[in-house]
Length: 215
Length: 389
Ligand code: B1M
Image (cartoon, rainbow over all chains, first blue to last red):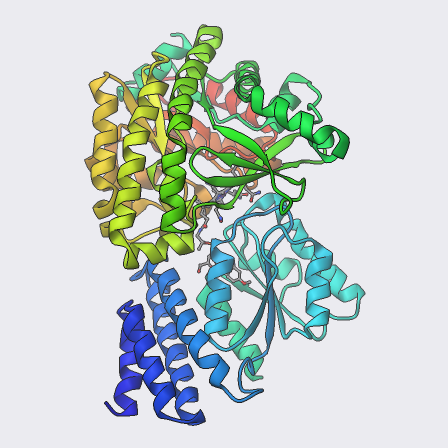
């Protein structure tokens, strides 16, 4: 199989939810070629995840499929990332992510994390029930491109404004974009508290962060 | 009509004297506020290292009493608020030392979930599911094997618990026992959703075994809940999220359809009715609910786009509808006019011909009892049959 065919197999396997075959294709690509082949494989994963995301947004795919495709991408990237030249990995930038204080829902946040990693971002995942200071400290320490907050409870949405206010107070707001998502939130709310973007789903969120990274 | 006749008439898709109102009161935050009680400062005691060990032992020894008094308060509060019915739920817990948890203690439920306790700003206790303990097939098998005696004990406790609540409160309110969590939740939450999704594709036989195990256990659990003698029982599983079902509907049918049919059969064989809870956007599952034999559904989460009128249009009177006042804004800080308008709309959309019980869409510790009072009051004013609004 030539490398184009292998790239095709990698994408198809990911979209066919065949982890074994996806990992196998990624391994052959990595073994057979140099830096360029590895880069191509990473791009293939990213493209395939774009298709997965579209299928989810269009209601063709459901959560288990979205999650499992993310898991396949994670395995494949685990294999490819160490082979990338220093600096090429995680070149897209760093994103700090967590679920706000008082909220323990993590399914949506985890999907965002896994897709962001699949797209080549370095992700600092702070977990759930994250207090204001931890968000702000992590953004500062990692020189994050973006800070993502997940929030599913109305009772905890006030946390988002607090994080943004603290970023401002510490002079970090200009350098860190803020994106928010989760069942409790709306576009209007995001605007109201001064976030840069609202993500109705993880894939749209990732598209936004990719745009920020490219600009 | 009394509260019981009202509920049972609605369950038969007939028109009672007025629209019945059901409470979903369970959070101590709500009950304490309604009853003017001070929260027991369990959080404070557990945070005190000199007390922790002792308090842990006391909690473990008296867990059934703690559960009972929690729901006794919930029923007392519901009676005070004027509800015709309220749900009652039993959760089996054991407190264990766990340095990784904030308080140094973890709460393990019988099914393999880890919960942590927090307290709100007034000191009310809240228990939250954090993660699963059974992240691999081996761990799951070992847990199930070791816990057999605990499952038997749990079933016994469930039966006694619901019966006692009915004995003590059943003459003043209709306590509807809720067999929760359901088969899907007991299958995925102890394993974790990411692992569960992986296993669906990589270890389908294991997933089937897990679901079969929880189906059998759930049927026993339901049977225990029904020993209270109450004619209506609640079951449930969160099958939806904000934009649609958690899994492809065909996959839900394949993995869980037969289990749910057995659930309905078990309930119907005892001459009872089954009301099913599911959060999220579940329009695409409504016909399945009918096919599986559910008699009613509760929740219809407005924040996930669920509208009573649309549900009624889709399933007609094949399902009794229980819901769905918003708990994200309306019942937390909505104005009296807004609450009243929402009650009128719900009645207009779903109450004609019976088969409708008004309630909040979910329990939530931020729900304000004042708004619940307004809800009941509006239901009494505008919910008289024949509906004329
Ligand atoms: C950083 O950038 C980004 C970008 C995109 C991001 C993002 C971040 N975060 C999310 N996104 C976006 O991308 C994802 C997919 O593309 C999406 O993520 P979601 O997180 O929305 O979607 C997930 C992939 C799947 N969806 C979910 O996982 C949530 C589903 C529902 C059913 C839900 C679940 C499963 C649970 N719950 Co809870 N729960 C509900 C939910 C109903 C609903 N409408 O969503 C909701 C959120 N819960 C609610 C409640 C009330 C509660 N829950 C609670 C507990 C739980 C479970 C533990 C049982 C479980 C969570 C398990 C877990 N580990 O996460 C309690 C709170 C615990 C706590 N302190 O957090 C409790 C308070 C219940 C109680 N009385 O104890 C309601 C909140 C109401 C409100 N407005 O405040 C609720 C809407 C249900 C309802 N019927 O009203 C997008 O929003």
